Image 1 (cartoon, rainbow, N blue to C red):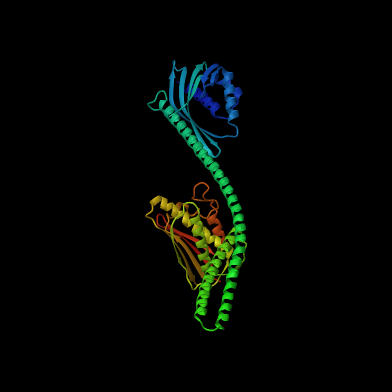
Image 2: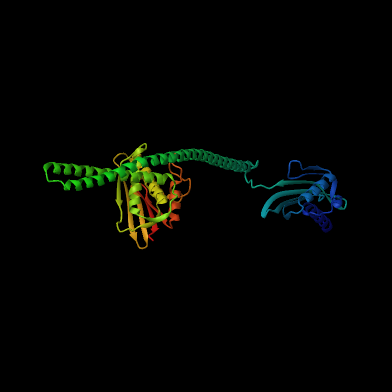
Length: 441
């Protein structure tokens, strides 16, 4: 092929490539290097073009679609053939389109083939074909590519399905939580009503108790006066017998007085607890408060369903002075911690059997400017993964409506209101120990 003919072919080829990749190519010049009855196929199903007007429309559509897009084109010749006595030419190029969309680069590889014919002194495009270049070596029908796309689609479906299952499970859990919360609120309402009832009963019991205590004390005074009068009479066997009997009655009245005072203390504790803590901070015998409310919690547990035997050990430091406390509030701390310990030990009995012996140890220690209270049980322990959640409101390890998840949260708040700290130490299967530190002044 002579140099001029070769030059004209190169120019026509370059025009066709420019027409394809240039976004402002002059469409009115296409007829200079494209025949009027040109035919070609684009890269999509509907891109079957017959005639030069179809080419113009295709190029115009491409220009419209590429507006405001950051697009780069790279072409590389992969095949060239001259035939028909140097009056026809075939070219095949790899065309790489890189589009920047949303900050990400998207690469589209294409295969672009063109057929030119020489008419007199001009080369013109008579046919072209565009196709997507896919990695399909040894796979004539692109089966492997289809399999990969199928697998990718299947994976996407599985991921979406798993996501829906997870969301459904979360929704079911949320619905169950709402139901449990409703049950707990109903239970709390019942407990509140029971608390009011308890307060009323305790108030009524206090009246006859006051009579018992007051008249036992008054009767002891009468006996002492009788003994004084007897001392004024002459000695006789009868007088000695009367004095012995009076001494027995006096002793019995002392026991009545003691147990009456004990009953009065229990009633006061019930009233204090039912009022929910409206007292004031005042010097308090912490050891006595612990004795009172741990005993009250134990008898409350024994009076309820599924009572258990518990060895309660009180190791109380007698050197403790009076501690500034809101006794009504702090009594709830002792009740909550001991009740939780009883519940945990009951669970352990159901797990390991009757050979297990439940034990609760409550200690107090006098530290420098601080007081330490430890409540330790030999129950099942607290797993590491839930310890951080244990003091959160409404978090509970109990099933159904057995617990509201508020006991430890309220306990923590009461301790903080006393400028104290609450720490937890536990070993699964062995023990749980709550340690409270309070200011001693």
